[in-house]
Image (cartoon, one colour):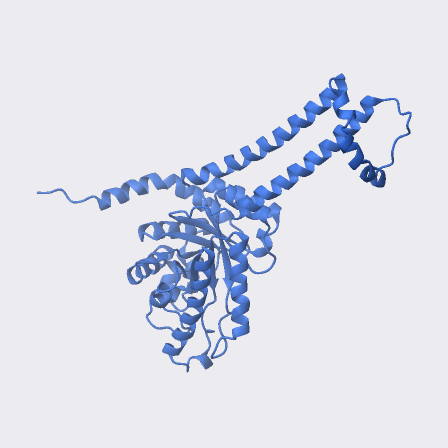
Amino acid sequence: MNKYTKTLPFLFVFSMVSLYGSMTCTRLSANTSAQTGIQTDVVITRSAEATANEPQLALANVTQPPADTKAPVETATAGVAAKGKKSVVAFLKKLREYQLSWAQFPIKRPEFLKAIYLTNATAVNTKSLRHFVAQSRKHGINAMVIDAQGKAISAEQMSLLKTNGIYPIGRVVVFDLGLKQKYPDQAHLEKILKSVEKAAKAGYREIQLDYIRYADRRDLQLLPLKFKYEQIGAVLSRARKLTDSLGVELGADVFGRITINRNDHIGQKLELFGDHVHNLYPMVYPSHYYGDPEKIADPYGTVKEGVENSKERIPKTRIIPYIQGFGMKIKPSGLALPQYVLKQFFAVDDAQGDGYVVWNARNDYSATWKALQEYEKRAPERKKNIKVAKAPAPKS
């Protein structure tokens, strides 16, 4: 994490403590004055103008004490208490303003994205979100991909992410399980674009489009590929114009197999997406290369190949693969899940990818935390070996 993002939590906490401290000091000063009898006339006695304007409000809302109430200090204390209550309300109001401003803060994008995926239900639950933020800070995760559809994330929750240096990416599903008809429904597209706009205004710094493809069905294979590319491209173009106008980046997910083929009947193609998005997320889960036991059994080689092919074909687009953080079909590799994840980390490094997102649909990242711990232990030696490998040959 860079120095810039490390200072965010400190600045936020320092601002809050300073604000609350100033209010507390003011309250204590007034209370001390009342109890010691110093300047109690200032607390009790008011100007003629204040006396003329304020009693109506007081009489309407507060039961007034009898005229012979003998304790001027009690009256002063009540006044201080009222002021204290107002100070707390003012503090909470100011805190809300800070949270709103931090929610919109344009946090710098990490050069190398190390992300996990969170469901909407996990992210909008502050207790669970705090847990994943704490684990992310502990293990070096600097970004989260969060389902932006469903319940909207609050300003407080978005502020929690940003003040802890977590780069927020909003995931938006375009066509659930793929487009199942020839043309996209325009009313549906308008709804999707509204979701994109809502996510950007909530503070997400990037919108990631998922399921932006045709359904993987035989009856749709009769449609010409050129036609499919045109339809998918048109959707990407509209989304890019919108995100540009909102000042956020655009990303998109593609099947892992798209990295090793040129034309696919689902209408996804690396070059097509590269023309529209800032960041591409190929889902190179080894378990999903159906019918290819070698790829399923080789997490390192499968991820490395997918990233390298993508970077070669669309070099101007950031390539950030989704890697497998779940246990499906890992047995052929002979590895436990933490080691399986670790091999994928190494593959992204060696293929010079621009980061990764670990996917686990249940948000169970216990194996990922173990993999990250092992990665940190082995990182110095790996960096040394990579540096030696890249060093120019000595001149003869």
